[in-house]
Image (cartoon, rainbow, N blue to C red; front, side):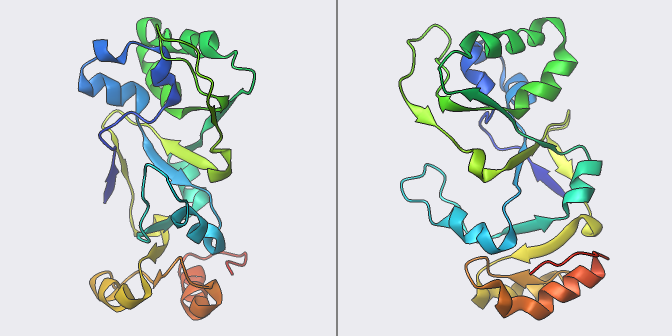
Amino acid sequence: MTLKYGTKPISDAKFRFSIYDLDNEKKLAYFSAVSFTETPLGEIHNLLEIGGRRIDLKPYGLVFLKERLKKKGVSPVIYINNMKGDKDKMVEALCSLIETHKRQASRILPLIAVFGKFLSPLGGSAQNRDIDFTWEREWRYASRNRCFGFDQRDVFMGLCPDQEIGKFESQFGWLHFIDPRQNMKWYAESLLDAKKRSRLKYAVI
């Protein structure tokens, strides 16, 4: 099973490099990744209730086991403090790795995100807008084949609307599903079964 990159670069480093000089394959290699969030189960509903957001998240997904993701190379996003709006040159310097250390650039640039002031687009004027998504506790996975491979042992729980749980569980017999918009206590039995299957020692409710 695999999760694939999206079609657009997600790394904030893209603002400090002439990405239009790159073909699509290289754009993805240096500025894209598979994205995860470390949001607790009981708080996932908050990601679905953000008005005016460009990305409209739906109540579907997979809950992965953090320790297994770490072993597969998934890393926390590198959040750069740009509160003073003074990190343009620093991120630009990181982007210079594309010319000097291509392989290392493909490992670090996809992980870059800033909070505070937006980075100024290369050759453009300074941005007087603020951004801060550190609360998402994002992790990312970058790879040469632009996808993340996983198996059943890596997945703790599935997410879907409550009325669709029966359909999804009949299709994926090895996996329990819950509705992230509901109180987790509704699914205590499913969560405990998933905990036992995953051989977790700590509580999940």
